[in-house]
Image (tube, rainbow, N blue to C red; front, side, top):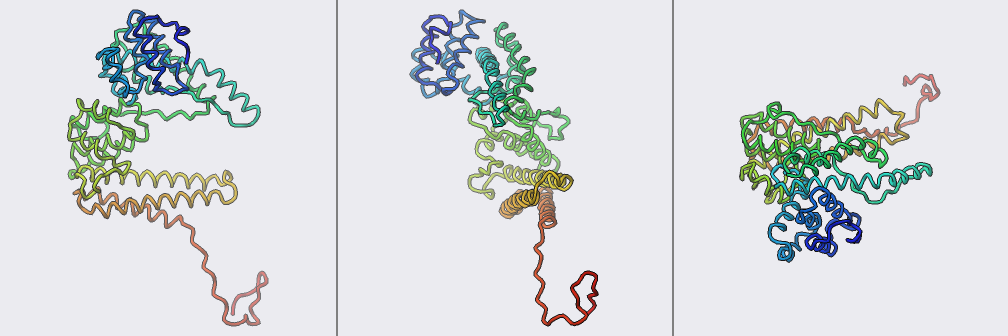
Length: 426
């Protein structure tokens, strides 16, 4: 970690003590030890007289278990800001729109510092990539943090013009645009496959039940940079199924399905931030059940009906998507045999059929466990239809073993000749 005397930061007590607190209990790991320094330097450039901001640049990265003793040293307000910052970092700044101006300022400085660090390291990384390419080997890059464009965009969308620090906002916006312009080059050099863009339909075009909890749940997903394009699609399709039938048009079930199936890495901070947006009935299910991960305490029979219905809708969507993906893969292999050497195509097909069969048996198992308890006959019928379609596909594509011909009971007669063109009339 860079020595304090070399940071260019002011020699005030609060900033230096915060620096020392981080140095003793670093929370970002040895590869990022200088990151808080960069954040503090940005604050010093735009708000040199704000010692609290510069102290927070370090305290935000100190493990929260140390905050109790530090409160006596830095004051309750500063540590309260540090806790707020930590919660927003753990949720990927998904709820930055409701953050205090101080925390919004931190989010911008944090994102700008990561962009600066990658820019500083990029030429060394490019040199490593070029050298590896010349040797015909895979490049071995040191640990490096690549900022998320979606996180940067989320911060820009909800923090700009509301932090109270115009110079910092301008500096952050410059970094965001620079990162966007140079990302294709950086990803190519680092061998990173860029994530697919996430496209959000206006709520009115989703076909979802138009009630506050469902609308607010969908809105929360559109603001959350941790929600991938695929997860959003799965969650929306499952919620659309629930919205489409009278037996499942339950606002709690639909909102729970959206949150449960889309936010896979949720934590207690998500619950805390969502409390002001979504009813507790939905959040209680979100906190205690995770259909996608199979976390259903007590089993499906004991789960609330909303969880049972979410399970059915997810099963229907998952089976449909799996079958379509495997069909697409098989078609590609059949149309491009030259791209698969030897028995590679058959090996891949066999593996895919095995996985598809495992998924099928899993769904059949919990469908038997559910019985009619989900009170959703249309949805259950749809799942059964998907099961039949997959079973038929597996049966059609599974190679049939050749049956051994029985040994002849007597030797062939005179008219039986095995030469080509001979008659087989016995």
